[in-house]
Length: 167
Image (cartoon, rainbow, N blue to C red; front, top):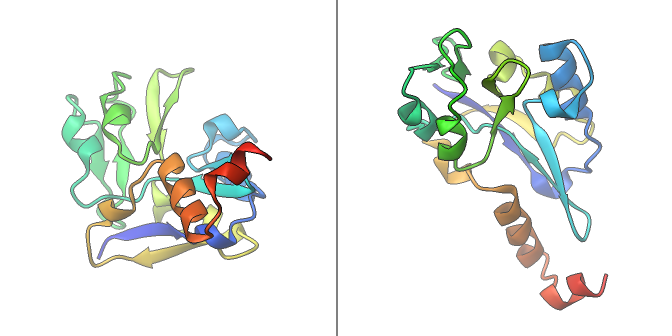
């Protein structure tokens, strides 16, 4: 069964430990630009972690003319074969969650690949806002832009838009 990291946005504090541990694990340095998870902040204090939701019918795989995006046989995570990636960014444009990022140093793309089934971000999250789950359905329903998620959270908290402009 496929796995994905699921976010409970209502308890994310925006501490960004997930970004730090991700870049350390994957790039051996602290750099939010090299993290496979990105935390976006919106008023009034809404933090939205963005990472690949591992769509079953992945638009990024379909968009790649080089076949550089593949499925990991163990986790079913979408992975990037950097040997095949030519940096065309068609997968970036195709991703509904905007969860594929460009490595300008290598002219390739990168994304969450679930750390081989042991995501460091899940382990480090102090509020347990991130969790690794086996998903028996296509997770594309979770693939939304950070702005959309933030707006849904504002609406669920019943924060009038007028209050945001006076902050």
